Length: 179
Ligand SMILES: O=P(O)(O)OC[C@H]1O[C@H](OP(=O)(O)OP(=O)(O)O)[C@H](O)[C@@H]1O
Ligand SMILES: Nc1nc2[nH]cnc2c(=O)[nH]1
Image 1: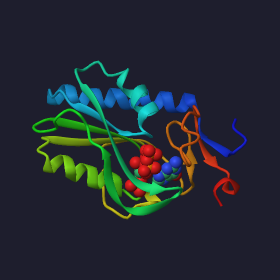
Image 2: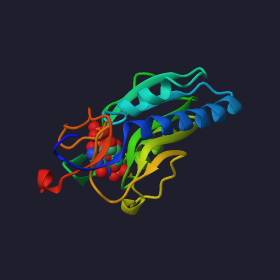
Image 3: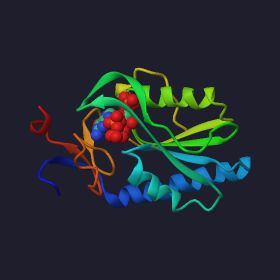
């Protein structure tokens, strides 16, 4: 375990097991609806989770990425802005947004609105982690991996100043690292 980690909250095995369950649930829903969604990963935190999910999808889908930002360090700095838009058109397409964590809910709320404005027919959200105690915007994620407490977590895509994304587990960062 990294010496900067206070506690491991979720092991690699727990995350993988949950990804199998989520992928099955998502697959059943898209098979019922008969749509070919664009699976859109929000860079950069969603990458490990998205890789773990999509390799288990057996339904036809396309993938794309976009990058939005709203955070600096551990605190929200307000508005969400698009740093890199996706390449595919979302007009008249079903979108499955893949996110690492829902915290205040601002990012997903803004991104979902943006897709609806661009003419997407259906926008669903899958997030690995949910921190409901921090929510300031009412946003519904269709699929959630795990609920986490109000602690700053890193690993499995989640960073602190761009570090720790490569950890294969989710852990609580020691306070002395960021205080
Ligand atoms: O629910 P919210 O309060 O909006 O917070 C969640 C967002 O914050 C983090 O993104 P960050 O801007 O740190 O980008 P990253 O994915 O590159 O780490 C995280 O990846 C989510 O996108
Ligand atoms: N790395 C990381 N990014 C976040 N963005 C919002 N909450 C968190 C968190 O707990 N950890």
